[in-house]
Structures are given as structure tokens and as C-alpha cells.
Image 1 (cartoon, rainbow, N blue to C red):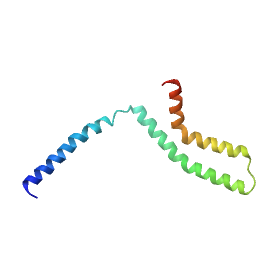
Image 2 (image 1 turned 135 degrees about the vertical axis):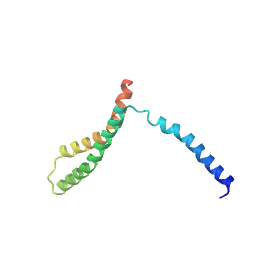
Image 3 (image 1 turned 135 degrees about the horizontal axis):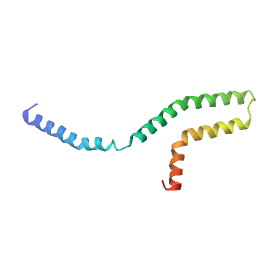
Length: 99
């Protein structure tokens, strides 16, 4: 690599870093509370995903054995919808009250 090519590559790398650094600084604009709440939300969803899968499997096995009531099915569907739809529900309620 010639000296001129090295300078141009170095100049391009420095230019890229100067453009990318302000983006990294703006990425830290969230409050610590929101960061913790987002982390808690992702942890709860990570725990609830296998639990919901096992619940649906158990409901299916109970339905095959003809030992299930419709109340359990409806409760399971509502619970899964509330757990996994919580971020959208919160956004919807905040929009209703202008928060």
C-alpha cells in the first residue's frame, strides 16, 4: 500500500469515527429508570415465553383427554395476550390520557 493510499484510508476512518461518535452520544438519552424498566420488561418476556409454550401444550393435552373447561382456555388466552401485549397496552393507555 502506498503512502497516499494509507493517508486516504486513514482520513476515511477518522471521518467515519467523527460522524459515528455523535450518534453514540445521543443513544444514551434515556433516563436510568427507563433503562431499568426496559430491562425488566425484556427479562419478564424472556421468562414468560417458555411458560406460555408449556401452558399451551398442557391445555392441548387436557383438550385431547377431554378434561378441560372453556374458562381455562379463555383465561389462558387473555393471560398470554396481556403478558405479551403489555407494551402496546401501555402505549395505548398513555395515548388515551395524553401522557
